Image (cartoon, rainbow over all chains, first blue to last red; front, top):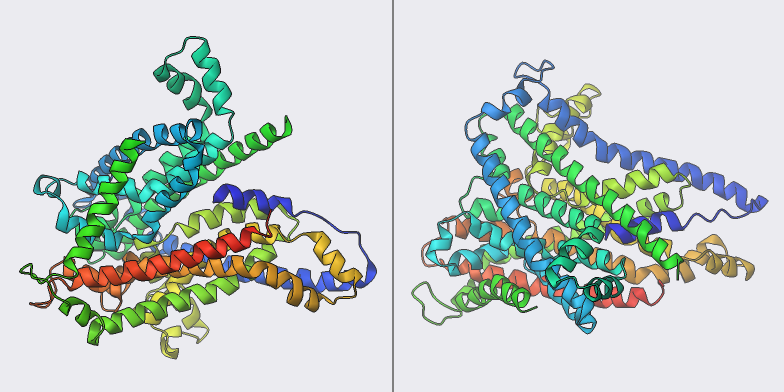
Length: 283
Length: 272
């Protein structure tokens, strides 16, 4: 989604010749546009500003880094953080092991299946976390219900649409068939082809898929809360009763982390779309 | 291929089948329509209506505003602005959940909110003018914050697809700016706008975390009622109502996504 949107942001830069009757209207439009952008900017920045300002206050309202610096030592914080970390790593690993070979196989051998894949991978959007968890808690076997990794199993499903799209875009940007044939004819095994030929060419897509998965796991509240595991977001919501400033500090830290991860994706997507336009250009 | 289909089949199929089955069973496991009957009466019907209303408000208003905002950005000549907005929309559109709750409490909370205090200084404390962050309309207000960027993301490719030559053709035939939009621009964009609004509708309808943490579960919405049954707050004898609500939500979301698919197909006709 990001890739497509991005490319269009830059495509429409036709500046018409400055005809005089149009000019006045253009000026009026320019002012109108400025007003829209300023209002939107204020609307989006004001709550963020408030969040940071609130997080950087102590209980008497003075400026202080206290809420941030006391965060690691708050009751339950590190347990929640490491639980989220473990779930995120496990989810990302399972996700990649499952989706990378699948996406490559579809591109290489079963391109006809691509519409089916598009459909299957959009299904998780129809089944939101709040609905999924009801079915999961009822149907999961007991040994899984006792483990936090039950969440990971379903985070893999939730992340799938984003991850598949990202890999699909990455694979469309390279000449997969030629790469594979070259490697195979030089005697490379399948594993070796995958590891040292395809994967390096998919770096950007893999990076953005991983970042999306991590962001999703670190932000997911609904399923974790209803399954009774205190992950990062659940801890933040619970700690609200104890100290509002610390809650905000944790929330802002999580936000900045997510922001960095997702900016990484946008950057990766950009390098990928540059590459795609290069590929298109050589043909 | 097989591992993927098995994983998806089990990961999505098993919970969905379980929901479908239990929506028609009593807690003791006997077949019944009483869960669905509960769903279309009283408090659960109210929750469903509220959810639909909330989704309508938070898809149509940001849907329309998002078109204007995206147009303002697409027609700007500043590459820096475009790049910033592209990143910010991608981030903000994914920015649901609990963070949103807490920055809005910090901003507009009663008494201590940073913006509340600021507005109070100039005598415009929103809380004194009927504003409440912790009710239905507060939730709707907060949802705008991620819905608007989502609309910008979805509609920008469509706006980029409006060709300069169409406008020139219309002008050559003497069309005013208004007539260009009335007969060319808006009809071409309409499927994309509708598609975007449907996507926003689904995203509001499915959201739980923000509404739950902001109102501490006091607002009557279907997702929150499901959450209550999971955490064991269901009334005795209504233990399986959660499955019926979940079934209802699945139906609404499926219909939404089918129409979204149709709108997308129609939209792609013009945007090549």
